[in-house]
Amino acid sequence: QVQLVESGGGLVQAGGSLRLSCASSGRIFGDYVMAWFRQAPGKERDFVSGIRWYGGNIAYADSVKGRFTISRDNAENTVYLQMNSLSPEDTAIYYCACRRSWDLQATPSGYDYWGQGTQVTVSS
Image (cartoon, rainbow, N blue to C red; front, side):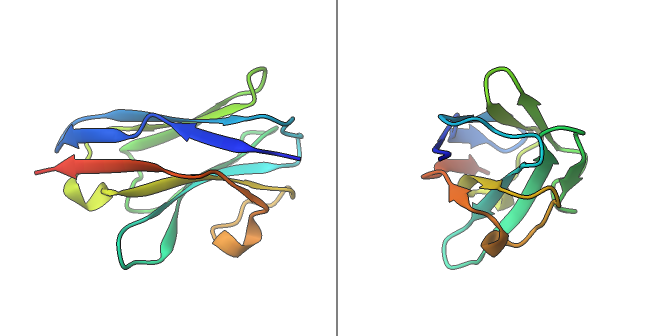
């Protein structure tokens, strides 16, 4: 069983940075995928970035490429999302998710475990 807990959200001015963390209480196996999604008010939950636990294959949404960086700490079972050059359009609840399969997908329904979410608010 995997339980995910996000942290690191908050209020930041446009152009600022935040680092989100997602800690798993259960072991993340090599063929799992960890991902970040976000959901703004009134909008669907969108893929932000994902990483295969072993092998390190990484994907980003076009809207965050060059600004966000996903990384992992295998020993700590923790995945991070470094967010730079934030804009008001990045305001959303950010969710960590785990997929018990090797293929990195961008569809929320493909993920088996979810964290409770952390709010990111970017002021203009």
